[in-house]
Length: 159
Image 1 (cartoon, rainbow, N blue to C red):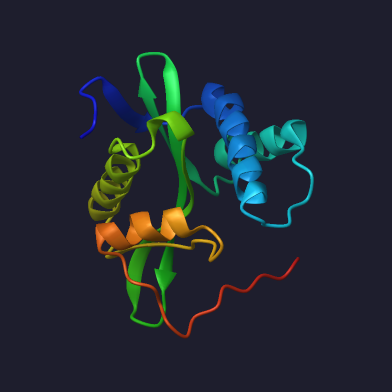
Image 2 (image 1 turned 120 degrees about the vertical axis):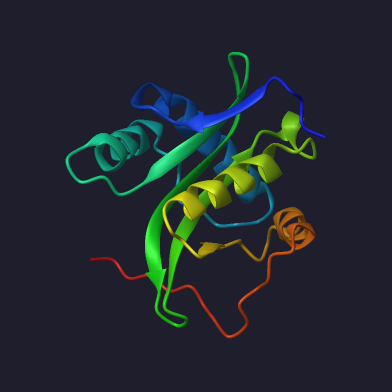
């Protein structure tokens, strides 16, 4: 059950240092699970968040979960189109809840807020990826009723 004092709101530019700090915590968590990662460059990542979230070409939006002045987690998302089913979507690229606040409804509340935002923006799907080496996250998403897209593999190519 989520604490009544927890607020989920759109992140502002001044929140980006907080998101970078939590993203570093997330990177450390995934590294501890065995994911091989490049060193975390907080300064460069902050510059990228500000450029792509608040610059001339906006590529993402973010939510912040907080309890009074304490930041509990974040979700980063953008909009897109899933051509396999011809459906509009909101694509969550990151969801992180700080260790002390996990299993208290914060992540579920952020997912519900993303669904609400998606419906408001005529999206039909909420989609995301989850690293196979993160069983707690997979269990969380399974409990929400999410389905794994069998036969799909996330691909990436530098441009």
